Length: 259
Ligand SMILES: NC(=O)c1ccc[n+]([C@@H]2O[C@H](COP(=O)([O-])OP(=O)(O)OC[C@H]3O[C@@H](n4cnc5c(N)ncnc54)[C@H](O)[C@@H]3O)[C@@H](O)[C@H]2O)c1
Image (cartoon, rainbow, N blue to C red; front, side, top):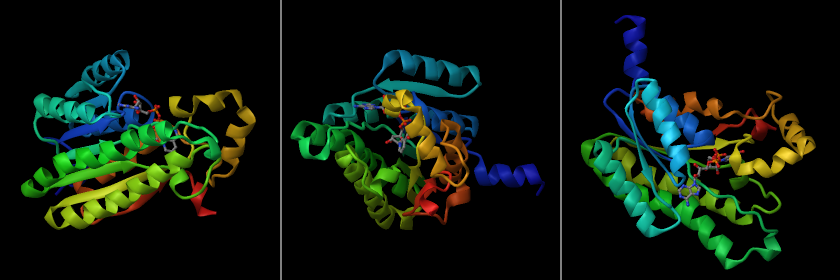
């Protein structure tokens, strides 16, 4: 077997269908593009129409198969609409990437039910519900990949991110439960754990360059992350190459957690 066939068999996503929530911006946008470039037909799920149109247009311009579903994952109806729309576009998915999230930031003492409920709905309930919808079919077909996107804040306390951190800790636990249920049937379930990445999610920090620089100093590679830093890890976790990796939290954080 020549080298390019060898690597293509390991990493190619030709013939696969991927659903990427939060796929129209930031890390999710980079993951959607990476999976599409690796050969998958990609359904991008998010709320904002203009960003969705732009993302799908760019993916199609690259020669990739892409479709969009506009849905609010904060509601059960929205999650159902997202799943139905994705299946209507390209059929049952082989790969589910749960990247959509909110990070609302009241000080912990002022954290009320509304912030808690919205955070859990988008960051934890939607990944659970989409997993329940697609995981059994993946297991029945004998192959599948579920990839969640967590956060360093699942592992340490950050001021004003109490609900967010809890939701991300739950997500990593969810991946392990899903792995326990479905990995015997060829479905791997893992979590990517980003460090700090400058995206719309933390645009409030763009006015605090000192804080952004301090976060970069805490990494081992000496810089904060870029959305494109997640492309390789996502393709790996979505491909045959990661068949023996499941129930894991994979840190893509420039070594932030290593010291
Ligand atoms: N940027 C960072 O520093 C960082 C660090 C750790 C973890 N993360 C995680 O990375 C993932 C991507 O975040 P990002 O930084 O790229 O931010 P982002 O704001 O660019 O992306 C978040 C996405 O979630 C979508 N979304 C939010 N609420 C939604 C809803 N109710 N319904 C549907 N879609 C909704 C948004 O439309 C957007 O596409 C998130 O899970 C986030 O928690 C980011």
